[in-house]
Length: 237
Image 1 (cartoon, helix red, strand yellow):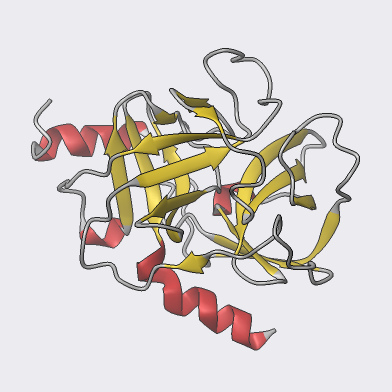
Image 2 (cartoon, helix red, strand yellow):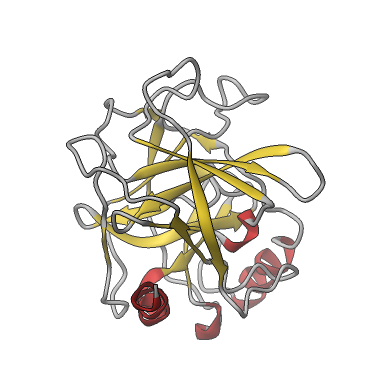
């Protein structure tokens, strides 16, 4: 595939419409327990009355970043989690305010970013710790990892029983700058999004938010481009 073929890339972007789902890490491996202390599992009660799941990540003791397409009527937030099932050690934290980006577009999945303010501060421990946000957007980060509890190729019909992770390689592309996204190619990774989880690169720094994609093309909302928006809303609270 020609990475710099504008028409191919534009067709892939157009195919993202309606493709976003929660979960699904393919080609990954189980994470070392509690090695990703910033990871958050979101149990969502939708406006239609169903229950779905997204991922998120702590950026302070009271704020979580996730994807705007994970908006819901009720949010149950779980921190310090490794196993998805039968974990009695963590309790749900409620959300007192959900702040989706005001320019989020459901059709194009652009500006796919949301800030959640927790109703109580979490206790920062070895297993529960915020992650730093990237401030530089002028280079393509390397050595990136995506984590989540989404579906896997071994069990494609239900959430993974424990946190999984997968390495992804970001590519240069010809997407318009106003899309504000990173992208990766290949089946390995968050197929159609492990929605809301962090794209962690260059050590332990969150560069992106898993947004959506197709089988071979994944998109991540570019955190450096929204850092002012995130910090501005945090300062208001």
